[in-house]
Amino acid sequence: MALADTSHYTISDIYALPEGQRAELIDGRIYNMTPPNTLHQRIVFRLSQKIDNYIQKNRDGL
Image (cartoon, rainbow, N blue to C red; front, top):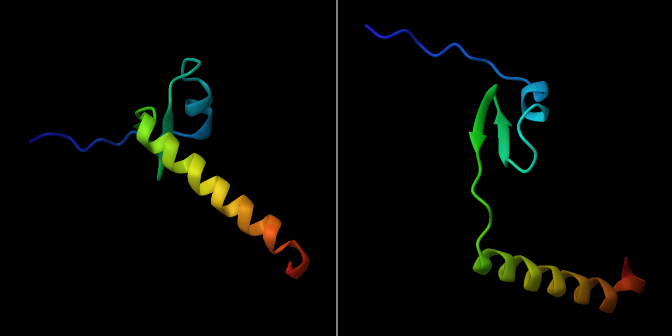
């Protein structure tokens, strides 16, 4: 019978990762992240533009 994984990581463990390593800490577990691909970056950029355009257009109402 295998033992349960009892590792519980903290934010200190995230800060100790090598520079440039992308990871998230969720409920004490570290999840490695893949870098965003080009399509993802384009979508985020366009969405940001749309949001900015809306804010600029409706600035007086905010």
